[in-house]
Structure formats: C-alpha cells, structure tokens
Image (cartoon, rainbow, N blue to C red; front, top):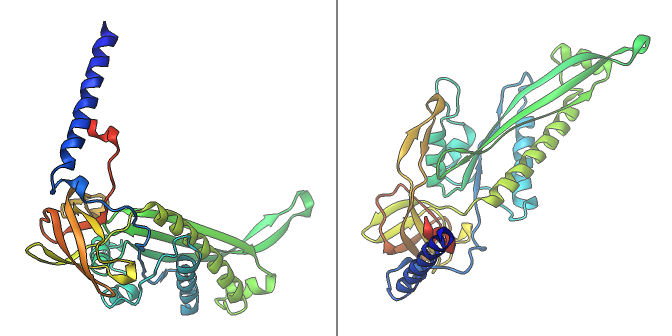
Length: 316
C-alpha cells in the first residue's frame, strides 16, 4: 500500500512537470523559446598580471620568461587556445602592478572589477616566492657527501571574474643540484653562473602552471559583463575578439550582492538567471544587445551561455 502511494505521487509529479513544459512552449516570452544550439565559437579570455618577484634574485628577465611561458601555453597549447588579453587598455595598469592591501594580500575585488571591465573570464596573479640555495648530506654510512642545491618556488592564483573566488591556487617547486663553484658564487650573491639553470626551472614550472590553468578554464563557462544599460539596450564587454556574433543569446545572471570572507576578501554571489540578452551588433572588444526576455537589475550582472536544466531539476 505504501509503495502504491509513492508510485501515485511520482506519477503526479511527472504529469505536473510535462504539463509545465507543454505550457512553456506556447508563450513567446517563456525561457524555453530562447535557446542556442552551440556556444563553441565563444572564447574565454584571461588576463595575466606580471609575476611579483619576492626572491633574492631580482632580475626582470626571470619574470619576463615566466610571463611569456604562461601566455604561450594558454594561447598555443590549451585545447581551447585561450586568448590572453594583457594589451587591453583597461587591464594595462593592473597588468604591471597587482592591487594589494596594506596587509600585502591581493585586493581581489579591484582585480575582478578590472577584469570584468576588460571582458575577462579570469585574472591570473602569481609570484616568485623563493629561490633558495642549501646543502644536504647525501649517501650512506662513511660514503656521505655534502651536495649543493638550489630550489625555485612559484605560486599562482586564478581569480574568477564572476565571483572573485579562486578557481586555482597552487604552489610548485623544483630543485636541482649545483656544482660547488656555482654554489659558492650564489652564496656570495652572484647568480650569473647559475642564472640559465634557474631560468630553465622557472620556465618548466610556469609550463606546469599553464597546463593547470588550461584544465581549469575548460571546466568554466564563457562569461561577459555589462558596461552600459539604456532601457532594454545593453553594451557588453566582449566582442569579436571573444568570438561573440550577432544573434548570440546569453543568459543574464544577477551578480551584484557582495559578501566579506576571510582576511576581508570580498566576493560577489553568483545569482539566479533573470533574463536573456540577444546580441545585435559586434565590435572588436564590445557588443550591443537587447534584453529579449526578463530583466536586468543594474550593471552588476554576469552574462553566460544558456544552459538548459535537466528534466529532473523540475522537481526541485
């Protein structure tokens, strides 16, 4: 008897679900009318701030080698070939100077607001944490010897421009042995002889970071943001450089509520879908569109591909 009761409840829920689906199809303003078969042409853009060098080796060539390697991995080796937009006028100032609080922590809100204005999906901020040299006793019994090493440590965080949260937070390191003569030079503060090996390791670590960023960005949806609203006409921060085309349909998601987390980091709350935007005209770094369904409550919104809910989600 109890099983029969559950069976009847499930049948009623299914009937209600199919009834809602049928009703949605007959109204021109229903969300089911506004859908797009493919978004594969959209390109998720990333901004790279210059790595901060906190090591004892203050050499700009090292920072440049890391930055160039990261950009090359993202644009050439990622399956999706992620565009790196370091040259965007809005991003240039941030590119050369990471925004930080008095505490030294990244000011993630400034980071992502700038990233939004530049039409970026994510912003990368990293640092050379340390390049240290040391000696370890190696071997067994009376065959032990002192071996000299140096070790490079890099740290990288990738910030989501929709929420300000970290999509990726990783530290990588690698060490290699150092000839005694070079070790003595490094110990005295002369890195000239060891620099080629330090650079080789740094580039290798940057490649690992780049590959992790590729993997993480594959999981993310394309995102764009809004700069102007005039009635139901809207200007967005992405254009043909991001693959935007006339006729593209993007879901409008509220993204204006701010919460304060640990160490006073601020985050936007990813909100619900409130409408649909249709792209009408496209320029290189911007596009104009019309709100064709629902509404847009201010400029603090995130535009994303329309994702159709599964039939199971109708029950919740």
